[in-house]
Image (cartoon, rainbow, N blue to C red; front, side, top):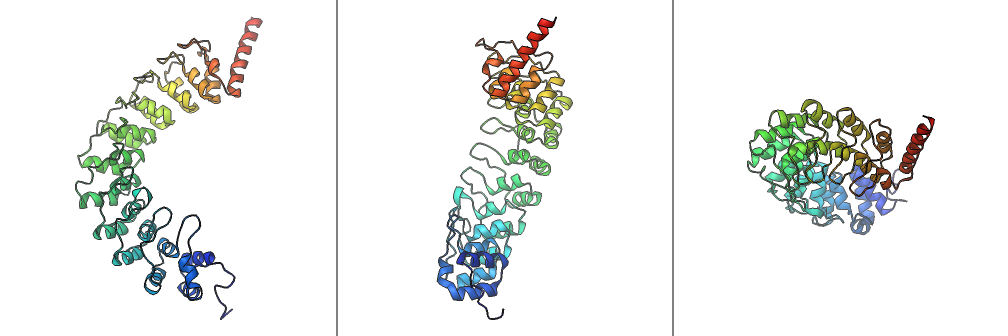
Length: 382
């Protein structure tokens, strides 16, 4: 009905949420005239969002201008995560809001919780216009967050090739960065399966394909963990990355694949790269079968058994894959191993314990009980 108050029967929160999302500047202006103090003082009870921050989040530049220029709102307010208006606008990809805020001389490299800048947040999306706008306004791409990640790390994680190339063109030494745990952008791109980004970074000639982070993890191990066979193949075939390299726990790529349940990567290593399934880790002597059984990756266990893994192989503690699956309560894997024709359930480890001695889970105990009963019955029959 014409002439009806648009704010009638709505709470302040409803007014703010509806108008900032819809961008209805006329309704917003009418409600602001009616309830200015309440709207300006409103904060979300959990997030600490203000009306101004929501305008930036939803890209409502006219409302933002109204709040700042007509109502005198400060652009340096923040929510409970430390996000300011520029964080919200940059993350949302709202170019006009970003430009407005920059023209108002807001702090370009303001930090939210965990030391993320607006530029870092912009790099989580395919926001080239926002990124270039922030860079031209003086944003520092070499700042790092609490984990040691720069905007370039984040760009390589997302795999937007044009943005990665932009950073390399604008800042030729930006590749030379590692996180707090020693991870390079090449590790990041490989872990997330961005083939073209990995290729671009390697073409720069700055990264060694077998570079290690503080845990000894290589980009190849990361690609294997993520089950990105195309990236793994590129690293091995074209850049001679070594599948036999070991991390600081003595694990090779085949153990990483077994632990993460990356079946496609495991098949690539075994079928194409001819990696020996019986390779053990340096410290524990566990084979890929041990690792997969402990994690309960039943499809990986099945593949390994079909491709030469010896079911009764022992690690340095004398434990078989069945010991580890039993202790971890991996019901399906225990069932598969116990019912395998070559499995010896009486094998004892260095503590003189059989696999059944480690069983705590009822379903696993029942598998061993039924197996024992079946063997007794079979012996009695014969």
